[in-house]
Image 1 (cartoon, rainbow, N blue to C red):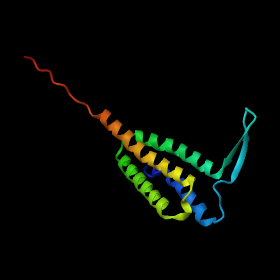
Image 2 (image 1 turned 60 degrees about the vertical axis):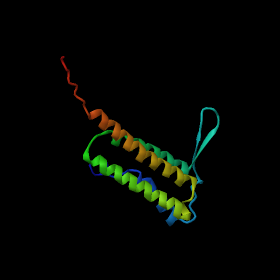
Image 3 (image 1 turned 90 degrees about the horizontal axis):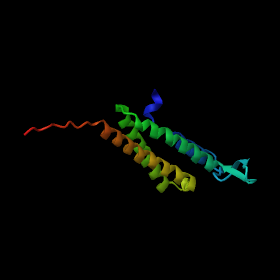
Image 4 (image 1 turned 30 degrees about the vertical axis):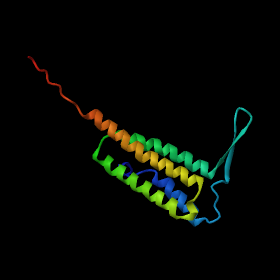
Length: 137
């Protein structure tokens, strides 16, 4: 499957950039919807909240992808690392993306890179078997 080798977090990153650069008056703090809660309060969801929540769900998929072992995993991890570095450079150098929403997307991307390598490394360690020799004296 094609999408298995692509870091899925590129989609929220692309959506963020499209909205920020094409819709100059777009606000990540604008309210999308209000939900009543059993306590009697209301939960207001903003655009930024929605993209961060979607990115966290995508992060779960990315971690599950990292748990399987294949040659494509290495490429997927490297592409995730390239995405993280690109996002970091953009965050540091481009004024339009200096927002809490983009910072949280950057943190999610970092967790994807670090978690992906950790899960793959742990799985690789489990796959290595050590044979024990018995010495009779």
